[in-house]
Figure 1 (tube, helix red, strand yellow):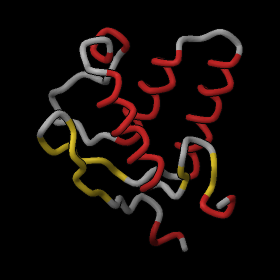
Figure 2 (figure 1 turned 90 degrees about the horizontal axis):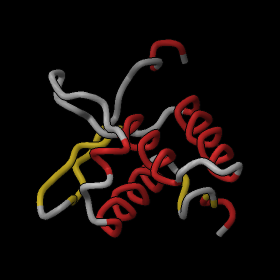
Figure 3 (figure 1 turned 120 degrees about the vertical axis):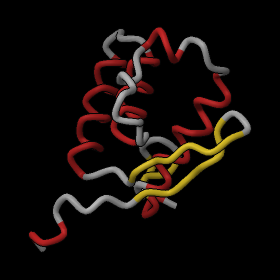
Length: 103
């Protein structure tokens, strides 16, 4: 099993009329997203959780800064929702928290 640690799986998804490369989330990434979502329930901004998801999943060019709230506010909400849902499906978690086993 150890030989597979660090192996990254990616795919391209539609975003804003173009393609965006996302990586499959690790179990650790899903835990960090869950912690952010729990903080959201305690009064944090929902966009903070979106930022965590996208920073874990989106393959950014090396010279690009991490995704922050200021940047996210410049995108249409439906486009952000679509890419977040695609990330979660690709990770094996569908509908933001509902696992495939729940279907």
